[in-house]
Length: 266
Image (cartoon, rainbow, N blue to C red; front, top):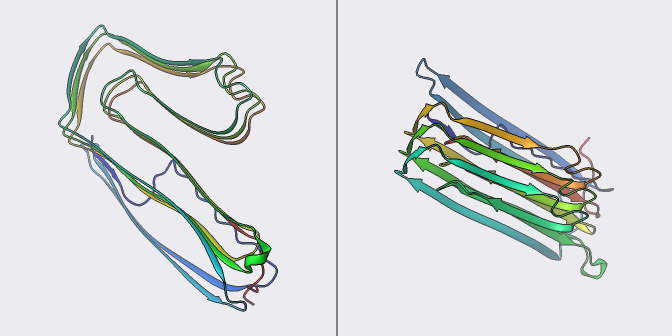
């Protein structure tokens, strides 16, 4: 099976909020999607998204805030053979009542691409006057011409024992007990208390090309137990893979502007 995802993924989430008391803006978004599926179970998704922002600036910005994150990961020609393997990625009773930003990659399996990215930009000094705020994250993960033969074996990912219960903040978590997976979590947050315009965006892609797996009675399980993440407040992004050659991603983009400088378009 071959998969290529351009620009964004189905598992991604995007949210753009612009709120201000004096703004005039027209936003045009054009998306052109083409999906082709054949009998060989090869799926290709091509997506082009154009965002056109037409805004009338009533107050000139006197300051700016920018944050960026970037990652590029490649697995090429991975060949794995395993017999009666017993591999587990387990988080049990950890990070209870944690606060802040927690980013975890856990991979007892071999040759996995894993990334957690958080980009935050903030403007809140009234003395600086109106401002422009931008946060962005860019990344790509690729696995090409990889193969695996499994004979028996048990592959498990598990989060339990009340892990992360009562936490506050942002959690990005990747678990992979098998091989050749692409896993990504990304958060971009742009907040301007005095900003004219606040923008947050994520541009990421994942691809598994030319991969194959021969499975002879292997057992796989992914598990989030009772009590995990109970009463957690904030953003939680979790990818679990006990299989081979998967693309998994969670993307959240938030832009908030609370300052002066724009009026809603009529």
